[in-house]
Length: 278
Image (cartoon, rainbow, N blue to C red):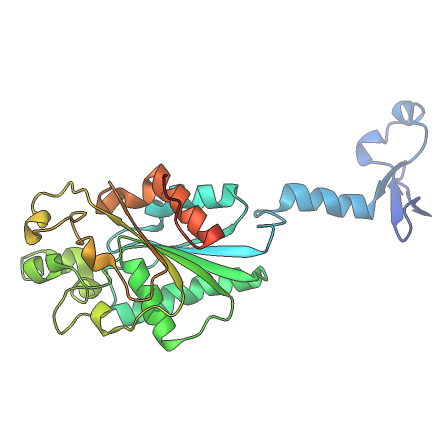
């Protein structure tokens, strides 16, 4: 018995149905029990496919906002996964960029990581594009914005950025293994003449900075005589033109995973300032 297909007008204006006798109902004994062809509206099919076939939310955020996450030096996007999940739960479209931080200079990394994030957000017609960065990631954003404009730029949250360079680079970059672990970009984050952060100008965009004042690295902390997170002094995270600044009791490697840090990052993206306890 051949499978039969019909075309008829649906009750929904502008929608046509394809009424089809499914292949698994070809047995006459079963067909006799059916009231007739089983209609499936093409519009309904598209809706089903949209729900079950999509890999991203149909509505990334109420206002079409996208967030680009940039990890730090010698890290991967996995370090920002907790932040990414929370942002997605809050309705943001998120791209957690993974870039080769140990293999290229800052100038090259900025032209790799930032455009990748921008392309993702623009393909989703984002009205606003934000950044949440850790350590080196913040310097990449600064370098990119020094040489390019982002028309859709929203707000930027930097976590433990070496905006004034780091003494760790000056004290330890000559030691064996430093270059292997940190690559060429690692030598550009100090406070000397090769410092990229010190060559960049003040912020002319909305940026909030969160610094940590706890360390789990007793060796690197010997480079400081002031509050630090084990790699960057609290004072050296500051940036002229920043909108807000906050210090939390977190260390450099794990600051981006702290629940209160994620809450504060979200608050800045939404309101443009950090939440203060009264």
